[in-house]
Image 1 (cartoon, helix red, strand yellow):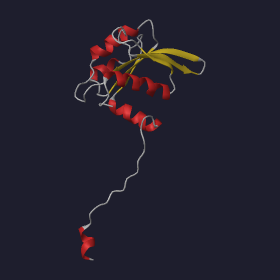
Image 2 (image 1 turned 90 degrees about the vertical axis):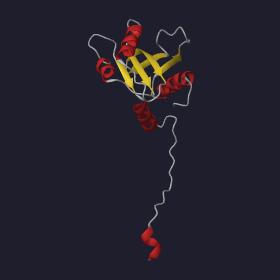
Image 3 (image 1 turned 90 degrees about the horizontal axis):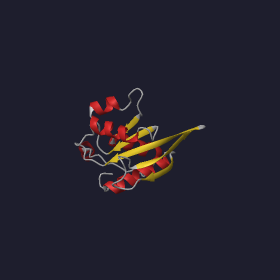
Image 4 (image 1 turned 180 degrees about the vertical axis):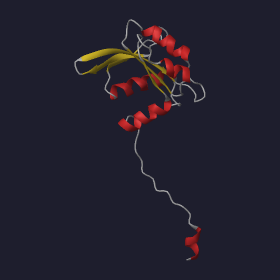
Length: 143
């Protein structure tokens, strides 16, 4: 995933969420996205909610901090009921602590490791390959 451009990563996140069951997921126009890269719907039974997604393709050492989560929440308040922040890196402790605040739009945080786990679990964009591994056993040479 780190080999993708930022635009490709946003489109990957859109496709990933569609395959995960989200509906009407659309990329927003670059530059005028107001912090929202992808938007759409999540239906649960008879209820549906508008979802905003921010996607950040960062190096592993470049963690997402509290200020980015707060800014994203501010951008989506009043227009969306749920936020999702997806990154190839990880989050600071402070960012994790504020993802769910009382009386605020909840923001689900998905880091690179979780994203890979979800991809494997749902078989989204991954392929299983069995390989044989041979181990050298020196004792077998002199039997």
